[in-house]
Amino acid sequence: MDVARSLAAGRPSGDVPELDGALLIAEIRTLEDRKSALSARQARLSVAFDLLQRREQADAGMPAAELGTGVGAQIALARRESPAKGGRLLGLAKALVTEMPHTLAALEAGQLNEWRATLLVKETACLSAADRAAVDEELAPDAGTFDGAGDRKIIAAARAAAYRRDPRSVTQRASHAATERHVSLRPAPDTMCYLTALLPVAQGVAVYAGLTRHADTLRNTGDPRTRGQLMADALVERTTGTPGGISGIEIQLVMTDRTLFQGDTEPARLPGYGIVPAGWARDMLTNPGGNVGDTAGDTASGRELHVWLRRLYTAPGTGDLTAMDSRARLFPPGLRRFLTARDDTCRTPYCDAPIRHFDHIIPWHHNGTTTRNNGAGLCEACNHTKELPGWTSSPRPGPRHTLDVTTPTGHTYHSTAPPPPGTPARHVEPDLAVAKTPSHRRQRRSRANDLHQARKQRQRAA
Image 1 (cartoon, rainbow, N blue to C red):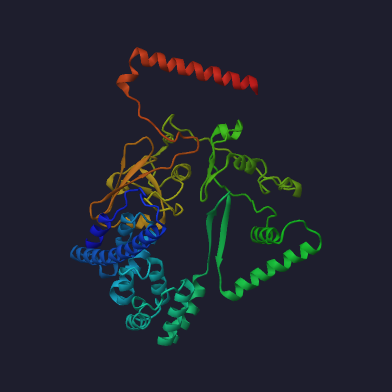
Image 2 (tube, rainbow, N blue to C red):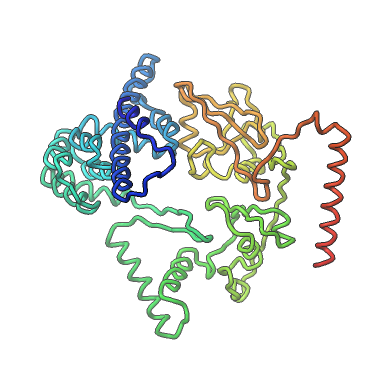
């Protein structure tokens, strides 16, 4: 509380009355120190909350192996982070408070920021509690060990100290790392994405060398593409077995009819990626086998791709998708596609994970219906968390589909479905009393006539 009060006392008003460079830099440094101190305070509070929740769960009869479930998700909501990030923040807090007092002291004093404290915790994760505490004492960042040091120097020092304490565990950690190999996809600007593979170093080097040799061979034969383009195209072709990388899969591109048929500039939405430009979306439908601006496409290779269109209807003004009901216990395929198009990603606040489960907001065993109003797309982790004692969800009225998530502490968080393409940025609820007056009806007729005349003029101009 002392840190919070001191921060409030020094809270900037938004104005910069003194254009003195030294004073401005001094205040920036002071605020950075306070951010670190508040991060340390959050760590202490997180550990205290975890202990309190475990005690309450034990009193409620929860099995010992399940104690602490849902704690990270509650911390994530409070910090406006994803549930996965909340779990990592709780793990960081436990390590700092219980095993690394010197690192925590440096964080409280502003000598270390939260990210660099995370690096120290990460690099000592393979050690026992006693060895980790010994490394923490040896490095002692609060004593000025890392003054002026960057991230790489901190990582190197922590790794060296950890290896000296327990070389066997560090070696085993390196061997275990191969089991965590995976491929991930992240959005990038301008309708691009990052396809990332975490591989053992020998395999990663071999893949890169193979792509490099292939690109150099084509360049030597006069291929006009750059080396990077050749490597990327070869990766796509060798992975999918298709020259353009597009096969018979459903990508659920969502756009308005105006964007598709009338050349409108309203952007579209690609599930798993996000917002994409209108022109790019149209090009995907007319040239699905090639890159935007690529005139070759898949038709040049003799392979024809088919495009299916599925109509979605939205309520005027609000953008809420229209209803689709079912008496089934499980959501049928059509309704699952509907929920995917409406929710886009997991509906838990601050969670951007892909939808993996289709959940009844009010559970089926509590007479919840299998309808679009009572359905929500969730990731696997959030769906399991929702079933823990003390967690509840409920639909609530709104211009678009909205639900409330209530945690065991009684805090409630709102989740509203993202607006479909073409939805107005700001929706104003109509005043029904005013709408019934003659003057308001005349104004509406006048606006409608103006819009009709403007549309006819555009059509004649076209």
